[in-house]
Image 1 (spheres, rainbow, N blue to C red):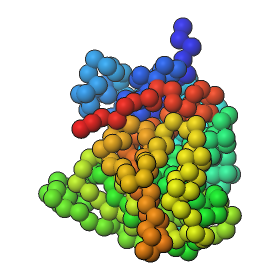
Image 2: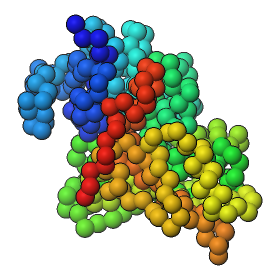
Image 3: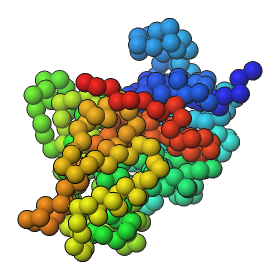
Length: 349
Ligand SMILES: NC(=O)C1=CN([C@@H]2O[C@H](COP(=O)(O)OP(=O)(O)OC[C@H]3O[C@@H](n4cnc5c(N)ncnc54)[C@H](OP(=O)(O)O)[C@@H]3O)[C@@H](O)[C@H]2O)C=CC1
Ligand SMILES: CC(=O)N[C@@H](CCC(=O)OP(=O)(O)O)C(=O)O
């Protein structure tokens, strides 16, 4: 009999879910025991995802809390907003460990959630139970937790780029601007005009300007780290590539610091954390350098003319921005090395 932790994935037919399958299939301590679909139960998962032929022969299960409880110890929700808010509390009450990669449990205020997500918020009692799993920042809280709210993709890149400064009081908190660009897989597998090939190919555009639902998530975490309310400008862009997020962040510092001092602050803040890599002076990361991996690479430049610091932070949105960080959080919850099953070299070129 297997002693592995049994994992179920709800939303296993979406991009986040399929990436969880890829990562968990080679995780030494985890066995996938249920892949779940609300629309295709009974069909073999490899029918819709031929890349899984001869690798995962399971048929899709229906969304059934009792069945999940019987088959699994941990359940991942990779579902659209508004699904986990209903389902996760039932799964948690059934005794399962829960990791939600949607935005349903990230915002502590139900009112703020409703304003930005246009969905009914989850029960506040469960929002309070959910630990925000930005692994390099709140890893100590994740250890031993049973319910994780996995950060959004843009917030992961942007917050890892800002956390050392915010936590140490080095930023002029009114000065933060983040200009983030995502590959198209960030929008999920469903079709919309925005991700239609002939609309996005050879194109580059800003979207949800001053309305993106990740704005309050980033502000909430920065406010928590800084100990005072942070409001920022956050603009999202779509790039005609499949995976990757590059967030360019501009801040003014509270006091004069040298670029070397700033780089040293980042290196000491992330010391011992395997997935954040700080580039040397004059080197800036590209999305291809983290493609398919759980790394977040960060480059820094202090402009002597303006005094402003530019921070470039890149991740793979589906890995560090979703499934990879979810597995990293599982590792921390279970007391395993956080890199277990995640030690991939980025795919290059
Ligand atoms: N793509 C990304 O880079 C990231 C995504 N996220 C978040 O992760 C979540 C999943 O995203 P992504 O995988 O891209 O989205 P997709 O649209 O690719 O997949 C979502 C899946 O959810 C399932 N689903 C839909 N409705 C229900 C329902 N009522 N009950 C159960 N399952 C349902 C669908 O599968 P079926 O019909 O088979 O049930 C679908 O395949 C979203 O909340 C997204 O915002 C977070 C970070 C990054
Ligand atoms: C390119 C693209 O469309 N990206 C999506 C990211 C959505 C997402 O991942 O949502 P949560 O992280 O909030 O769950 C967007 O901008 O809405």
